[in-house]
Structure formats: structure tokens, C-alpha cells
Length: 216
Image (cartoon, rainbow, N blue to C red; front, top):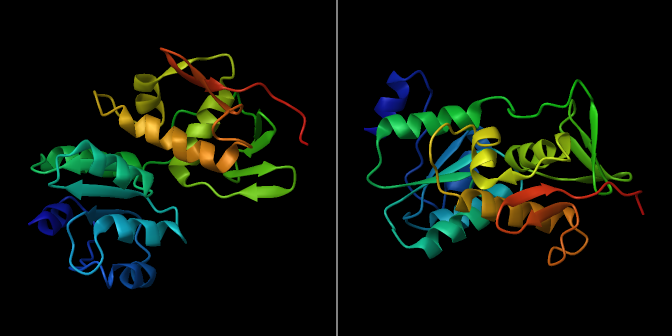
């Protein structure tokens, strides 16, 4: 039924009914986006998500009937960009899909092709992040989050502001999306994720860009 709904909405849909064959099927199809159920035979959705993230930054939206907060956070930490709990409104799912497939939004950098944040250089045109000559591999959403902060270094962003500018959501959404993605981003870009200097926390408010420093 979901595939039929999405096809009627203009998308081409490929279905894989078990987790064990999902990574191989993903490699064959090379989809623009993955809808991934957590409860799957073979490998569960979280394991499949981790396998996909080993090689690809393709957007992943997890679908789950599990209501526990822990499972939601584990799914996001595994690499999912977003999640929906069942039962969900198909129109809400469609809005989430469209948001994840839109080009990068929210980066107002006055035409600059390169941004600085901490000791990192963000190449907006090439969608690359480097520390010196070393490239740092980010998913498109992680790149958008970092570039959004870098583009407005004096701005303190609340979680709701980031949900609007980075995720493209014009309505209330789960702020855990922001918290977990900041944690994932810090694990890739910080020298010490436990003492973040690039993506700084403003306690009680949100996040901002850390001070620009010379590459070490």
C-alpha cells in the first residue's frame, strides 16, 4: 500500500522485504532515498542502516512501530536522517521524503564559496569539508548542519531553528533529531567530541559555530 501511494505521488519504488538482502539490494538499485523499517527478518533496520552508512550518505528515513525513546535514538545514532512512528499519516511521510530530497537549504553565505568553522574549511560548491588537506566524510544532512552554522558564526541557533533551516520542517518536530545529529557530527569533526570547539553548545539555548582557528 505504501509503495502504491508513493508511485501515485510520482516516485519510482523498489521493495526489499528482508534485512539480510537489503544492503546488496541497496548497492544494486542506488536509490535517492531509503525508507527503512526497524522490524525486519534477517538483519533489523538498525543493522541495515549501519551497513548502508559504511558506504553511502543517501538519506534514510526509519519507520518504526516501537514507541520507546531508546530505539528512536539508536536508529538516529546508526545513521538515519529522520524517523516516523507507526501509525503515521502518509501525507506527513511524503512531506518528510520531499524535505530529504530537496537540494541543500538554509545556507546563506553571501555568495562565498568557502566557509570557515574552527580549523575546518567548508567548500559550499563541492560539498566538501577539509581539515588542512584531509577530507572529512559527512552525509548531506551533516554537511548542511555544519555549513548552516558556519555561514552565520555570530548566530546562536535554537533546535527549532535548525529543524527549520537544516531539515526544512515548517512545523514542530522531534528536537532529538538535532541533538543526535550534532553528536554524530561532533564525532567526525571535533578533535575531542567530549570538549567540542567546532560545534559549540550554548547552554539552555542551542548551538553555534566555534571560533575560527588556524589549521594545526
